Image (cartoon, rainbow, N blue to C red; front, side, top):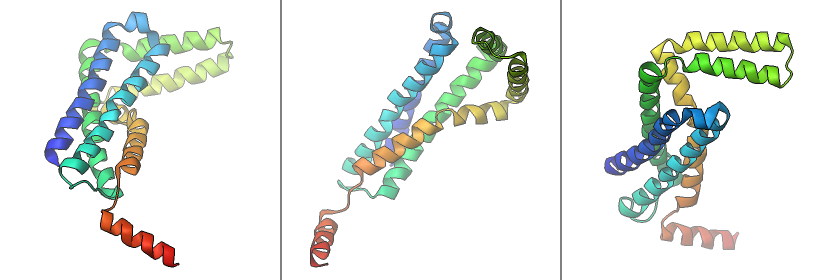
Length: 184
């Protein structure tokens, strides 16, 4: 199981990290608005490897069958490893290459709010929230924790769908359950 988790976790982590680096290189062309789309698209592509990893586990380690709980465990480990790669990449980018990221994002968000016609009170509230976020992001532990939460929704969906699609009982268990349901 370890080999499968490491292989597929690092493949998924390499994909999501590569997209993040590419987004940094092309940040001016992509912009903040499309950056979110690129980021979550890369997560979806990367977390497809949760499915492939669980399938490899089922077919190569578990003898062709895997229960839902075990499939969730394998998929979760792959997703956590990929997410850790994502966090590590972000930490390096944020602290070494883009320490002014939140300041630029703040300027963009306020400019967009003004363009959209938000009231000065709403802009002031948004500015205060972004200032608090920037202060929290100065702490590397909190920065990593927030970053780890970003891919979590995509990872959870990928794990649950993969486990649901790929889990199956042994054929003898299925036959016995089918007979029992016919008798009832």
